[in-house]
Picture 1: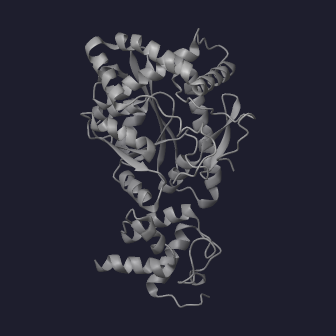
Picture 2 (picture 1 turned 120 degrees about the vertical axis):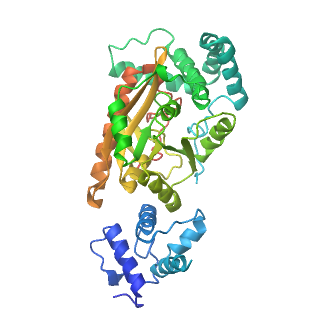
Picture 3 (picture 1 turned 120 degrees about the horizontal axis):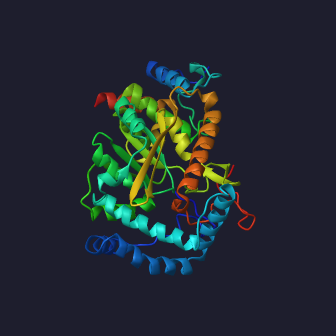
Length: 91
Length: 319
């Protein structure tokens, strides 16, 4: 169980991550919204980041921009990813 | 991102000879005096580089030896290394001609017309692998013939700068888009995905040694000895989940032959099956490359040490 509760959007993004990356041994609840997705957290790598970018494009119509610093922030945690989806919805 | 590299023999540091001015000159010679004059003038130029670039000369010689060993029936004739340089010079002219739309469609022979037509008309798009063999710029001439063939050329920024300078000087068709990258970012991946979703084709070189040392490579037997091939293009195929093709354009007598083959399809490959897919398709690509080297022996334009040798003692890019 994650330490911080997931919002419904975070939960659906967690499902997307698990499905996209075929993370069979991880449950939606296991992904702490505030824990890092890459490196020591969920342990995703740079190729996974590309996969996630494509999944975001496919499921949420999100087009990332070329600023790698921004993208790093967006991809840092489930919470940040949810914030990105929220922000793009608003516009 | 390019990691600092210990060896100055790395391909990205061996400058491809010739400047934009030089290219313009070539075109002028071709236009006013004809191809034979160009070829004649090329001989001293090629001889100069042949003498002044011992590294390239050695690479060419090594290639020739391995080729001869793999295809014993092949007759390369005298001065093969020098002629290899001359052939490379001719590709410069072909590149410029292609960019300026001066390749006569009637001189382009396309034996795999059916495969190409099917690929375009399926609307599925795909990833097209190109190599050092021949001169894939001729595909620009192809896209003039088939306006519905939309190509996006993925190119390392370093090369793209020179290439763009050339493009700027040309009255080219607008069919070929150049995407400059130094690494594949999520943004680039999305852009490529869009192109493929629209039925377009992404073109990438698959036999370049990795640009930065951290990019993964695998060793395959190529012309009888292990050589490192970058995984990048094949990982990209797995990411984009699309049909995979091989394209090469070679000079064939007075004309050009364009080969276009289906190599596979990465749609529906499960994560667990990826490594196997990668190994199988990389091996298939290397085999095809080898076959075409036997067919167009002096048109594999790779003038840096390609095979691992104890002298270079390097496992750079290797896992």
